[in-house]
Length: 326
Ligand code: BMA
Image (cartoon, rainbow, N blue to C red):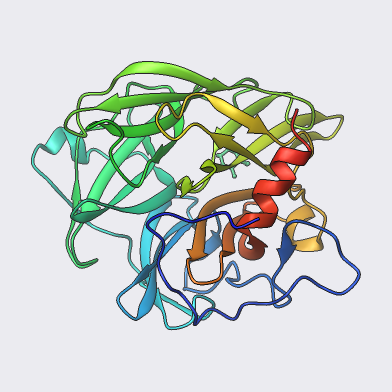
């Protein structure tokens, strides 16, 4: 089918695995999951919804760690192979121009992208309620925090990896102050990464995610449109179930959904996804593409407790979305 990934990197040195024999799933799990246990560093209660990116000849990540006081914060880590991680024992310290920006209630669910000349990090930032925190680094040594992108209450701020028509672009998901029982994805643009506007509706709940949806990893630019992997939630008798889905969006007007897969890509089915601090959660925050082979490695939080990895192929995912469109 030959879907072309645009602006991709070569990342041959992940422990890629083929789809298990007999499976026809479009996304399959790494056999050694979870890749990051809940207690990889001292005083961690759980390490989960986290962002990873290739950097020079290794991988770096910004990790959501809830500590044993249940303080939620972001930590930096490195890995040679994307699987064995060394995570700093202290959270990232942010350099802020204005002390008001630095006021800290919680930080969680980071996303990470290279954009123009630096690595941007977005996360859910507690500023009198959840909103979209934004920061950047040039070298993963000094981290700068910028103004929050939007007002509370909002979560799942996910940047596009390039400007669209000269503007920075971001998904977000307006919410409430708690375990929001609703949620649609919106697209916003900014001339300067500070002032955000021109908000456009992208997508809302449907079928397996009839309660809410939120953007997941940084969208992937392809010859067929932006490949968007997202999480979606249904409400069962026993609470929320978080699964992973996918859609294709228009390249020039990314709020326009070209098509969206009716089935989920992956739902919580393994023990480490079904049992943990919050059962029945898969929550993708990063998707790495090997541009040489179109393979995808998706990092996701499992049961709000550990990090898992799953594999897919861009061509197959695009075909799956098209063939199973809502
Ligand atoms: C959402 C966020 C995620 C979490 C999920 C399931 O509201 O808080 O960090 O994984 O709930 O608890």
